[in-house]
Image (cartoon, rainbow over all chains, first blue to last red; front, top):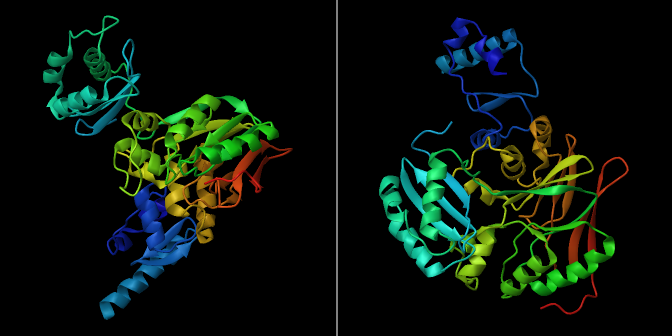
Length: 75
Length: 320
């Protein structure tokens, strides 16, 4: 999952800060529960659980990041 | 690899002295938390621990070496040898929790939950268990409790050769940090508790099983998310809240492929339950007595999988 995020184009990488949690750890479990996730892999954007049980394609993920970035900057 | 600032905990098996074990910690060449366990003069042992606590190893070894008592050795000499063995890598740091491995593969095991310190309940359970042809009996804690019968309980456990695992209250008693709501124990009984394993591993039907009490293991000094069976403990306690949160079972199923154990038994929540998720059997033990009935679990090798039955019996002799 993290690989696919790190493989995003540079211009997308500049818009985001990536955090990865290991589900084997107590910290990872705590974060999983905070986000109210249910399955793996899970991707959250801005504290919101957006993708569960799937790894989004590069284009879809890039589009979602750009959409959220624009919304934040417009408001 | 541990950094020099990390605390390493050791358990040393002594020779020729009264206490069979010495527990101690070393951090950055400073000695901490020495405890002579299972025998000897508890008063003197506690004094030695206090006097040596937080002292540099080099100073400590000068004080300890060359003291004899019997068998050409002594508790201080054994501690010196233990420290030197730890520094020389001849003993490995202990896991944060103590593990006992049942050496024989089993076909039928009896599993007992919270005994609350009541030897009458244990006696009644054993009378029932003996009729079922089990090969071993495991008590997963707590052994101690509100019933003021702990001494007799320990005698029964020892006499019957039961495998006992330390529950959270048992651990608090062992550390001397139990609530004042519970009757105090003698030091010898506390030493018995401190020597108990905190996790048991066993083999049944070609599967690896583990049994433990619950979440307090994660609070033990040095607990690592990556030590053996920590993943199973984290998944049971933190992720699924002792299998009570079914919404996260899909995530649990994703993780079971990384488990070492295929049968996982725990007793903290004192509620009976069984689940089969991702090829792993999870078993929650209820209490040994519910006010009316004695209860225990029979874990057995089945035709294609393991079988687990909850055995409940009423009409037992009056148990107070």
